[in-house]
Image 1: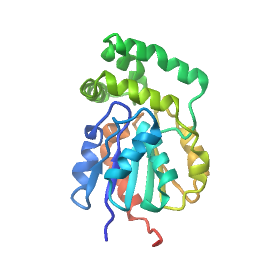
Image 2 (image 1 turned 90 degrees about the vertical axis):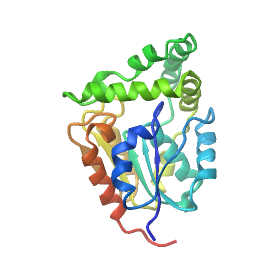
Image 3 (image 1 turned 135 degrees about the vertical axis):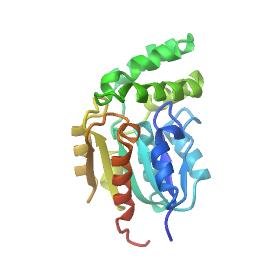
Image 4 (image 1 turned 90 degrees about the horizontal axis):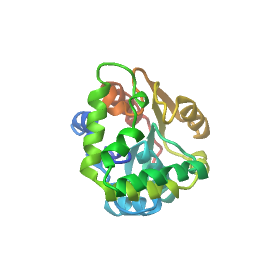
Length: 236
């Protein structure tokens, strides 16, 4: 039986960040986008997702969605048939990184969500080229629709997240680590480290993409996901 695919969007994103992948892959299997706007801890968000998802599923997460995907793998490894981690970070937040979120939270509480998002997701986090502004505008639109309360909850969750290196080292399912070559927010070197940490993981670097390759180079991401979904997995 073809396993369903669960996609986990990044911070202040929704299903639109995966629109090209949903359109292509939903012709071949059931595709679900997990909600990431509930809870102030990664663990709470993961629990909420597990309550709504199929018994077993393939899992792919982008950015914060990758962090949530690692927590899902940690707490329910028997339910995940394969995992894809895109433009993400397995490490806990350092105290300086956590502290840097506080002025953003203050700004959002003061009604400056758009200004804060434009400072948090800067043009150079994406690949240079004529499509950059269109992708940025899509990201800012999603953030505006999510709203201030979601921004605050998600940033609190990121501040408190656990280190997932041990989780990755125990991964026993087909794994794909994917990153845009121009990603300045979660760089390629971090993904090379993750791919080395996960037993038998595949690493795919997407050319002419930055932190949001699902929208910057959608066809390349679709191809990488199809290859990963076609990998054999041992029955449990």
